[in-house]
Image 1 (cartoon, rainbow, N blue to C red):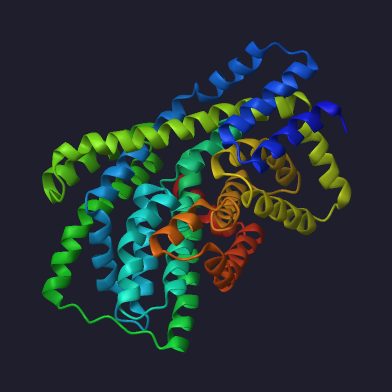
Image 2: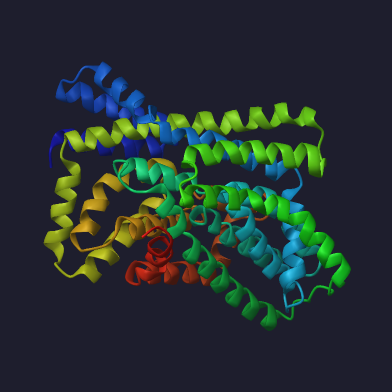
Length: 429
């Protein structure tokens, strides 16, 4: 292997191992390699700037702000009540409510961690109070949050489109995630119901028709955020970036002038929190872009593609290998940098076996979503355990049935492309 490749990957993995932040690990390993091959540092800096100099990335801060506003403005509580009206009457009803609320909130925040922080802070204590075991409450909350990664709007889909060269329609990616996201929710409900029956968890009380109407009316305004984003993008009325900006303005109006659960003075704190998240995301995107460029310069994608195709010419075997690679990498790296690094490497591989880039985008998101629930880097797992005040080792062990459902969904999406392509093809041709 080329010594430059060893320096690039070796120094990066070493810095990850000693827990240097991911953005610094990516940037420093790229810089070390540039020095070794004789490239001026300015080239690396130019690639970092180029990585974030994209109009499409403007959607990300707006999505983050909209999610923060809705998350802190009472929407999560309303979505939980609305979900309870629909499905709370079943055995283990609160678990079903949890999953359905995550499905709805995922269509607003587009973030697994935001989902757990908002929905989990309400649902985990509530489920424990009603007699649900702590591990079950946390498991349901964190696994259902993965829906937020594939159900639109997902800023990770935008990053994937950028990493793929910008030639993949964000609107089609958004639409491609709807059916898989709903199917994932249904699969988690089936598993949760089976466990609830076995452990004899309680049902929720039936809500009166009058109260159900009031709750539904109160929730619809929040849910319209997702409708605005998806409808506007798919109909071509506005771009993903414009839809994100409109969604942020809409969320601001609904939260502060309709719901009025928090004073408008809290908006400054929301902006501060959003800025902190955005700074981290932008730093990771910049350094990941430089790292991915260096890999391309060293022809690493071509080497990996050749290596995988030389292992087998069977598309099933190759796709299984790609999924294994993504599942493994997802356990040791954050999602955004991994999308930027892995997409240029693995997309040519899956295209060579006939997989559509839309399908691969959704499959990649779900694979990396599993990584968010897996030690040692699983940020969603950490947040859930922190809210539930439970040891990570115990929760990770009890997650096994839920991991199985997620892996089955990964395989289903990998080998049944109609699940991701039917809706985009039907609505956009």
